[in-house]
Length: 239
Figure 1 (tube, rainbow, N blue to C red):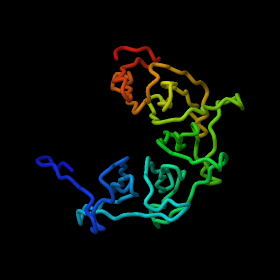
Figure 2 (figure 1 turned 60 degrees about the vertical axis):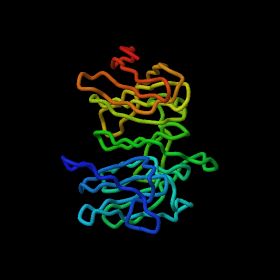
Figure 3 (figure 1 turned 90 degrees about the horizontal axis):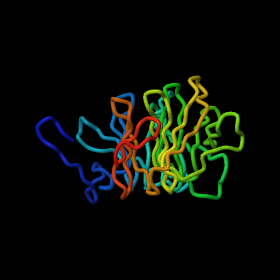
Figure 4 (figure 1 turned 180 degrees about the vertical axis):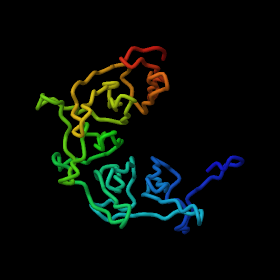
């Protein structure tokens, strides 16, 4: 934590339940009530700024207890969606703190790693997983595979590491394998259907993060292939 003058480091302390649950931080998120949530390799933590300590949240659903938390995102109904390492997606009610599992509509026999979550301007949540791109069906509390509009059998099934939305509400996808980057044009209605998909195969290495700059160009961080600077159309400016 930086207070403008000094940095404070928070570390896990043995037998201190008010310390953060692990020193390996996987993700963090500030919710609509300005509370800081931290996902670690050993569970979920809520920072208490008044006590300057952490409250640990351990779930017992489907073996999630002490599980590695990979991604966090709040939806428009005051739920914190929690992506786990192998146990799928969970939903924490931010008013009651009750936890429930978001069912995976298929591939029930496979472990589901939810590596990234994004909320669109229209309120739809996409999930980047090891089993491809999925979306949250809020009415039925399910994760369903995302299909390209008008192409029933066309889906993005590659293992996904990261998701990002640009200023024009395009969904950018960073793959974990040799497929590089995908850019998905979304419809502007609440369905946010994928209308068009472009694949920019800039590197066979894993895509770790995607960020848009003020000039609308994109920065793409990779694993062991450096940083790529791209035009919005996928053309490489610099590596």
